[in-house]
Amino acid sequence: MLKQRIITALCLIPLVLVGIFGVPSVYFAWCLVPIFAIAAKEWGCFIDKECNITQWSFTITVTVLLIAINVLFPADSLWFKGHLQPMFLAIISIGVVWWVVSTLLVFSFPKSAALWRNSHMLKSMFGQLTLIPCFVSLITLKSLSSQADPYFGGILVLIVMLIVWATDTGAYFAGRTLGKHKLMPNVSPAKTLEGLAGGLLTTLLIVAGVMYVSPQQELGLLVVVTLITALASAFGDLSESMFKRVAVIKDSGTILPGHGGILDRIDSLTAAFPVFTLIYIAMWM
Image (cartoon, rainbow, N blue to C red):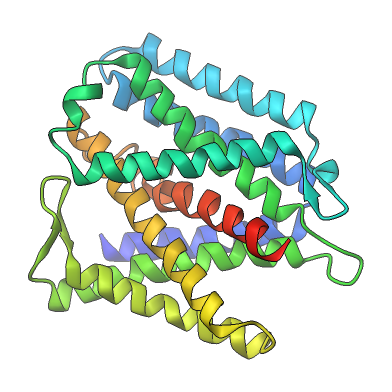
């Protein structure tokens, strides 16, 4: 399994880097649509894994919304004099609020599941709140650029991904070697407090890298933002685990060998991107 995961990751990383740094923002936004459409199809199984009509209905709804966002708000016109398009800012803010609510649902699981377990409407709404703010946040960061540094937005996207990857990798190895105390046994029995601590510590390598490349950054603020983003990514992972547990699904899909589905690969990113983007806008714009 680990070998398969590594091979798949080695195949995906070049594609991700080309997308981040080699594709203009407008085309990048359109490239994201089919990826998030597949993720929406997978979320449809959380709503009702027995009903293809429900799954496709949710997929089509999300896809239409993503297309509408790209048509109405082209990625190359989102920023004006350092200010983000208000609709995008509102969607990102709503996304962050959702992740606060989702974290509360995770902490109170399985009792919280009584509120939404049998509601297709709520699970559909949760899916839209998970996917659309992440989509919008990705485009928001990617579209940040200047004549002095046309790759600035791409670098921010990569930093968020590195934080998430560092958190996942550190948590995996720390959990396997040191894990004794369960983090959320009702949600994900394999995750441990030691794993979470290892993941958070590993993200400090990203802080060290950023400080080395850009030493004028304020260290304390960078550490806080990195840790908050890492924690958000951890609860994004736990949130998907919660929905899979209720739906009695092991993996959201099979499209990525060793990883499962698209949702299994981006679950941490769906929380990390809105949280990081909102903090970035508040602190640095």
